[in-house]
Length: 432
Image 1 (tube, one colour):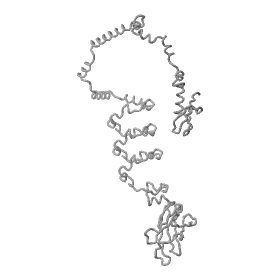
Image 2 (cartoon, rainbow, N blue to C red):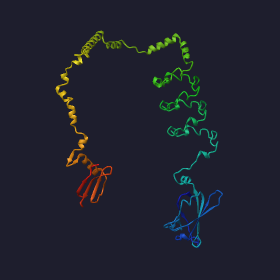
Image 3 (cartoon, one colour):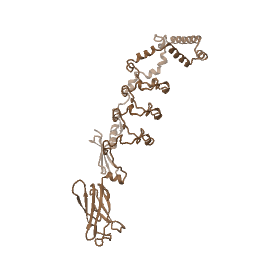
Image 4 (cartoon, rainbow, N blue to C red):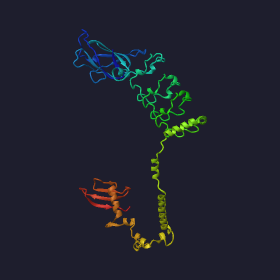
């Protein structure tokens, strides 16, 4: 039994074709167009076997069959189209030519493309969880110790091999993770990698008041001595580590303040004195030399008085310089006019001269009306230049070329040219 991929064109090695008389002599030169070929497909769905006639050809057809080069055993190369193999199941090819060779039978199993590629290519068979019946895999069906830390390769389960959102609250059964579900000492400091639980490893707002179940953290669930100075990292509890308004009246339990007051009321004098003694032991008081050095840096009374006298003199000078401002004939008004407005400057700004100077400047209309040559004005020149350089033209390749204005409703330049394209006559029409 040979395997074929469904709906895929293929070339098959068929044979051997043997002489019909002795049954052993290979037929290596049969006329394929005289050979009858039939394909029988069995669907295994209760329907009748499907027969399809295959028309063999020597070349240029859908089912060319040629003798294999250098073959001496009677084998031929047969082409089959994808449409002919668009079936699934068992297929039989039968070749007959009773006057030349014995009947030849070829049997195949046509497989789905994914199955064929899994067997003979790089694809993989699809094995889905849907094929596993309910209750097939249960805790009771798994041997003790079959799945434990020792059966997993190093780093087999890490954050990088787990897809995003593979483990979420919605995918966990209620009560799946509880204190009872963990073995004793399953989660201890020794089982956690260094830095596994840090501020960076915890997503923002992962641990909030709403995310923590009621009574999840109680005094009964905290080991004695779990919270000590040694248990906290340096600077673990500083102002920067607390969220804004995390400690407010609303955030404190109703009896929090009263409990603090009750605690203080039980504080004995001896306990207070012990606390003070301990604080004094750790207090690093400044030495006399440190105090003397600090005091020496302060200015003396004489130095302060001298600085005040200097400031007073400077203030008096400023007052003397500014007392005359605003008084006629004094202050800013006392500046000599001659030093500001000289005769030469006034002459330059003489109001009588300004109108004459302005009137002497020609207008735009006067400039455009200026004659350039003969009777041709600047305005005429600009219209001619615009027509020749940027206007549409007609008559190219003939004896008369016409250049139009921008509106294409006026022939501005009409040029008569000779056989060498030299302009011999120019007619201008710029009055529009």
